[in-house]
Image (tube, rainbow, N blue to C red):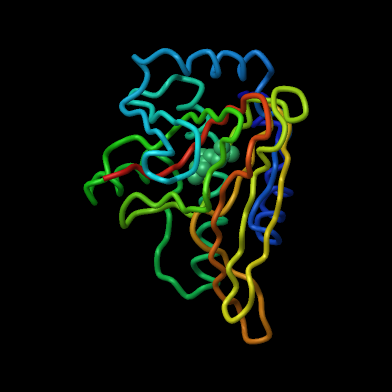
Length: 233
Ligand SMILES: O=C(O)CCC(=O)C(=O)O
Ligand SMILES: [Fe+2]
């Protein structure tokens, strides 16, 4: 994972984020790393809370929030990816005329979260079986939020499961919403907008709200690792 992230063309990723609000880093995790994470779903010493998605009407499936300290692989991804995204986040806030600026390191972002009373880890692992899905949502856990998050795909579509596409919906002002459907491979890392992104119009940039979700898993099992950079209240 480390070598893969160090070898990533972050300038190209930055350009894609500006153009589309999301980018895929193919093969960020090795198949064995995906398997180890999937197996660790059952190790309840790693998690602070288990959520049944049906119970909260979030969809169908289950997810678990990790406790601190995070497993080293996950901690490294959070720390390594964040500094590449903070400058993009800052230029977005600038384009939209919002004063908020994000610090250069993830440790400093967590200090800001803690000062606002957000101290619980938000990293989660999700598991869906046949009929599973995730309704459109945004992962905001308090006033402090970082405008990008990651999903690492731990299962292979067409092999481990069918269906279960990753869906982004862009809500444009005074226009109908625009869907984007993605089918990343096992090991891929998706970077996408958590809350809103700037889109250039004739009178400067305007704000487009982005939600994400997962379409129905028609058969098999689908696992994902969600890395959110801000902490929760
Ligand atoms: O399972 C997925 O692809 C989506 C997970 C998700 O909503 C998240 O990580 O925030
Ligand atoms: Fe989410």
